Length: 275
Image (cartoon, rainbow, N blue to C red; front, side, top):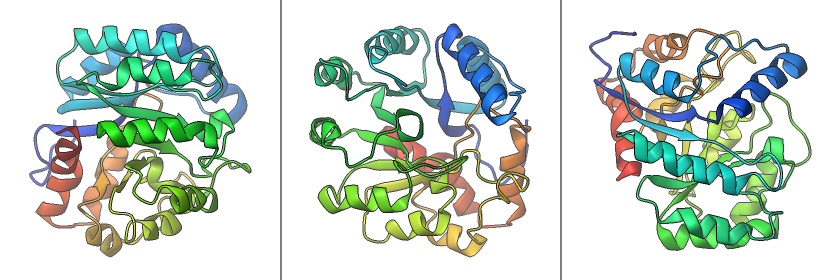
């Protein structure tokens, strides 16, 4: 556990992953085979929750995602069970636009008080954020006061469906979309950061970003982080890490920013979105 008087206690982790055991096994195997990444915390969901709580985290906000049609409904049924079992746990639920009953699946879970919105893993789904098949979901989320967690950056690898230009195209249609940009928009950190000025409902999370050995780390200087301290959320990407969980926390603390910055990023901003 990282202990530093500048950190609030407990902290809020706004980017955790929880999946059924077999899906976790498949993800870890995929990371190892395709990226050469060996996940060091191969913890299933109960172990993950226990570990984070033992290390000063709460509330915990997790997500999972439908990598193909036919998966979202089962994942969301599982999410409801997990949310009912654990206090202080919140979720971005699953959605896939190619399910015949995609909107019905979303409607069946969107009103759950511990569901904050939906996760769109566009790098895995190979879908543009501006694909019109998402529009009904965006309309639903905005009507219900929920959010979208977007993996729309081109890290760790990119392809034609992700990147800041694709996200800007979405913002042309939905300028007020309530969205969290996972991984600070890696690897186009500055370009995604600049979107915050004109789009007040966007936030960025720190997950898998502040690691000097990963993609040379985030290239936003500390003063820029401080300037947007109201719009940045701490997230760990736990348990799918190939480095010590504490490394990103230590890196953020090494910037020697204000106590207010650490309080907002590690707790208050997350609590504000949880409501």
